[in-house]
Image (cartoon, rainbow, N blue to C red; front, side):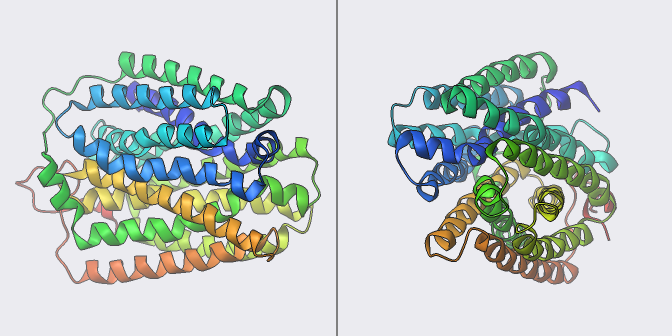
Length: 403
């Protein structure tokens, strides 16, 4: 893989650490700011809503900015948002800081996915995108547990200072390793918006919203579940978060080649497995022996959905994939916000700490149903051409769309 993808993965590591570290810090932040854990859970939603708003807005504003420069501008905004969060004096300002840090997230991954896909041969594009996303998964193995430990010993503000430093490192890596792309095709806002209105693109986004919400309904409250229900000590939560990250990494490693070979079967299988695993998680969380296995498997099957959904949306958007890819991350983070909100609502309603797992299973089934409907529509329509395929070749690569 080109070194530019390494720079994208380093940036993804910083973004992933910021996005997911709040799950492990919720009890500490709630205690420090004098609020409840479900209320502190809105800090997860604030970041996610920043992504939802920022992905289409910033991508549209930067439609004619060279992609390398756009990546640098987005990473600078991300770094500033984390620096603001580190010095936030209260809950309201921390909520604003999380929203600000989330604004560039979707646009960064939208632009980054297109750059990664176009740096490699056609039959390796899903693997290139998955390699970039490895930064997110490694963040859950190293970054999130380390942030949780740091927050427990030095306070949650220290974690935001560390992520600010990672943002500065990412800026340097992007500037040094991502090449200029002077011959890249420019697309205007109108062309990007027209691509986003295609029914198959919208169905792909809806699949992400409902399917991935099941993951975050559980993950947002994983630390509390493991301490309140399973009976683990606070210090053990970091190990369990690392297990989730290992599962995510395994899922990402498997998703790349599987998606290159057969996109829709990979998507269907991962969503169906996610629903089953979430139901099992509801019961496994009662056991100290079964809970770690359930956490690992949940991370794996949950993250296997991201690569096929990203590649599907990019391909269905044809020659204007950037806004569609960025909007896919809006969808993922709308799932994040919705999952966190629905999971917190179930807990607040008195249904128990593990009730978000059952809520998540229902959401995963809805996502699978939407994906099946989209697949049926796709079989009845001519296949669009793949991302980056010359207009003179009217076909879509089997390596991207699959059988």
